[in-house]
Length: 228
Image 1 (cartoon, rainbow, N blue to C red):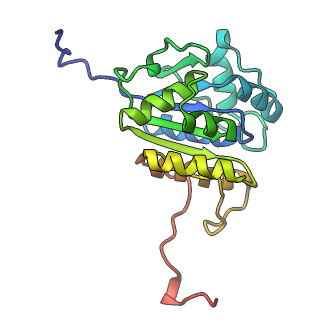
Image 2: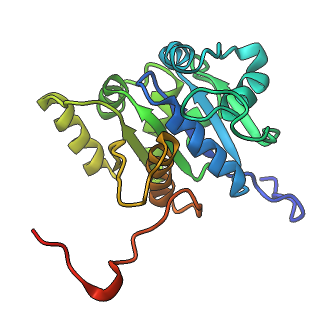
């Protein structure tokens, strides 16, 4: 057995999986906040999510140019306008193709902090709940569960049918955090990005990653109470 050198800290990334559901601004907000918090990130973008990303941002996410495409994506706000955010350093992001089932995150021996699926489509929910592992995103989620690591599933669909509800219950029982992409309005949102950041912040809350994406509720001033 080869010891790990004391001077080389082990990289333990968060795996961010992006499925084909509408809501790529949620993923961008989570990725920006993880990088701002100094976290390492492994990124898995499903084939279906590339089409959604193209529809919602106009960006064609390409394996050969993923760093350039990722920088462009993270610079856009929720309204799709470019240069809403300063360019980010993505050197500590590792990208794995969705079809690469031999990638690092496909094995439990690959060290990660956990996985955040943002957004999660109902097809993705079904695949993870049933253990299908049809692509790297689903396989990594299955590995995350079997290793007892944190899995946050930000499901983005409405309404939800009975079968999907059963699958979400199955994920909850398996140890995942089911987090519907449901924005709240008490934080004083004035722009669409505020609503996006609220959901992204709740994802990071579930993962235990510090952030400043939204104003937290501290109780009403003056000790008053709302009328029913």
